[in-house]
Amino acid sequence: MANAVARPGYASEQALLDAAERLLVEAGAAGFTTRKVAEEAGSNHGLVHYYFGSIEQLLVRVLERFTEQLIERQRQMYAADVPFLDRWRTAMRYLEEDRPYQKIWLEVQALCWNRPELRERLAQVHGEWQQVLTEAFAPVRDRLGIEMPLDALVTLVYTVNEGIMLERLCGIETGHHELLEWIERWLQLREEAV
Image 1 (cartoon, rainbow, N blue to C red):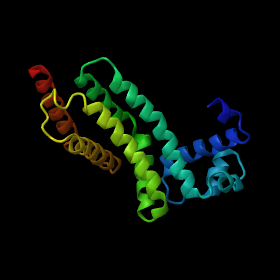
Image 2: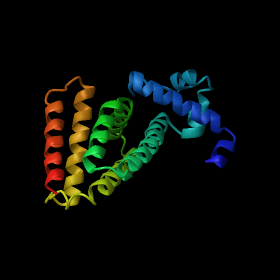
Image 3: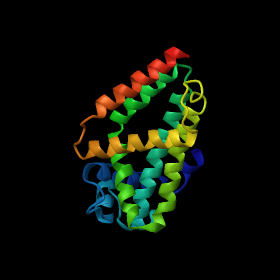
Image 4: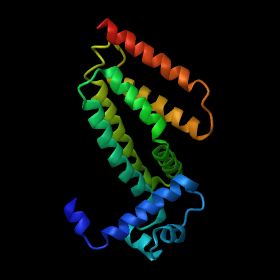
């Protein structure tokens, strides 16, 4: 990382990423322009294309950078020497706290629906999250008596979380609290039975 910071243009590139992240969270991808990003960053709009190639590539890079930070946090959290239920509770608290990331994740997903050239990078981000969940559930699945195949369990947890994220961003929260409470009680009963 020290070499990256010393690289010419690094500060300008990071300022553009920071500005794009703020705009994406505040206003979404609709109407997102290189001029708005450059203005927010206090930079020249030509630098967006110089560093990222296109506004879409900039948005995907925003997602990748944000993901890198959260993946590291998640791995540390799941590696903690505490009962799995405590790690689960922390992860669900993050689900509530990480709404800016969730908005970026879903905005970029929507962008990729019509831009196949971006899908591979989005799939890499998805794969990173799948790997974190696989690492988290692999050591406890059998111990908790979960008979579902590991890949299916990871997909279920991932899909439920993504559905909650999408609904919350749309202002829908019906049943979320009850679902998460039920899962927590179920996990607690499993932990107690071990």
